Length: 285
Image (cartoon, rainbow, N blue to C red; front, side, top):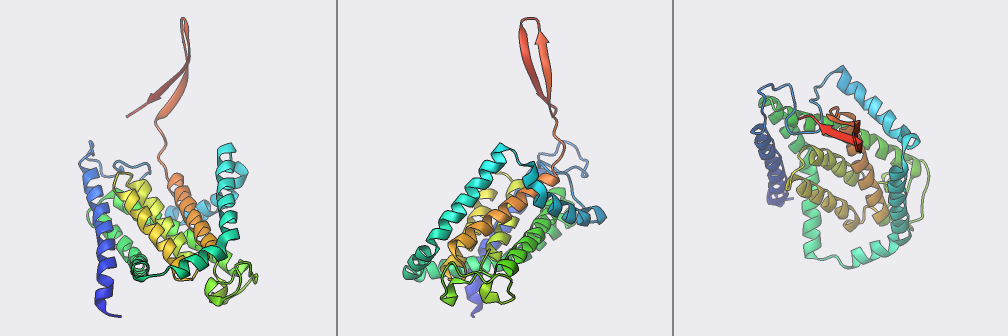
């Protein structure tokens, strides 16, 4: 394939990376203390590679798997919504697949090609961003790289486990959307869930959480959505595969970020002052 085919997606990926770097530099201007051991303008504590970081993979995986036992009403509602949408898409998988394949055109093919190459460049771009963090001693960039890597790996374990144990037939096999073979090592039967979509959202969620501004989250989530849609467009996955995978990557990324969140300075105390009674909420800056 001509090298020029990669120029546009490479440029898009480079733009995303430079946007993150410029956000990091802007964040440095907001540091009041010169102490570089504290992350700037972020909700997570600085993360460094070491025994604690790698053992966190196991701890975070265990916490994610056992989290349903600790769900509150809001969590259960969110899970029900996710399962309901997945089930709804499942019932319409064949209709969606037929519609998408019927309406392919030059524009959609080019977009799908760009999305595929953006995903191809995303991991090298993340590594480059991590290298920038270490070279410039930018704690936020380093933390983003390490947490994104953890989210990527844990999501990959979940997804590969589901692929091998469910054995759902890919749409290009010509089999119905309800064809599941159970445990299978054949790639043609690894439709559920989508590895590309889950990985894209696993990375995007961490990046969006660390660089929560008006520019970065729309860019990274938009690119991830394009990657997910490309899998349906290219007849590699059913729509329910892609949605479920995107949710897995998203929630795993959220869990990884939350596990490294700094202790909050928000506090509550009872207030009894003559006529007034209530709670006093304070936040230490």
